[in-house]
Image (cartoon, rainbow, N blue to C red; front, side, top):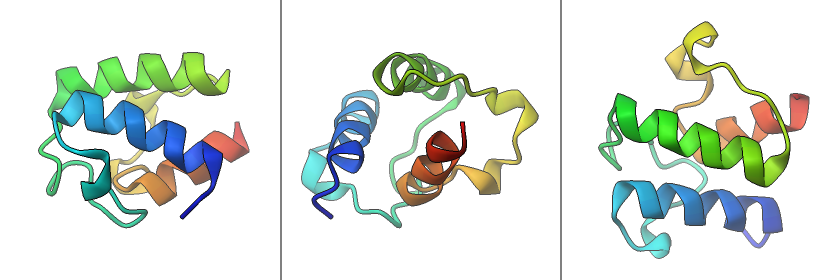
Length: 79
């Protein structure tokens, strides 16, 4: 996926998960495949909010609604 928003999100997630960006695909499970824990998730959400200029409240969202980069981009688009 060459979407610049996906590329920006992928960079953030790769930094937090300590993996190569190439390992992250639109359907990669953030929790299962990248092993992102709650602290990393909060840090990622802070960066995502700055990068995309949105406000996201992960505590008020069901985990299934943002467990992949594809779903996370959809949430960002809705904000």
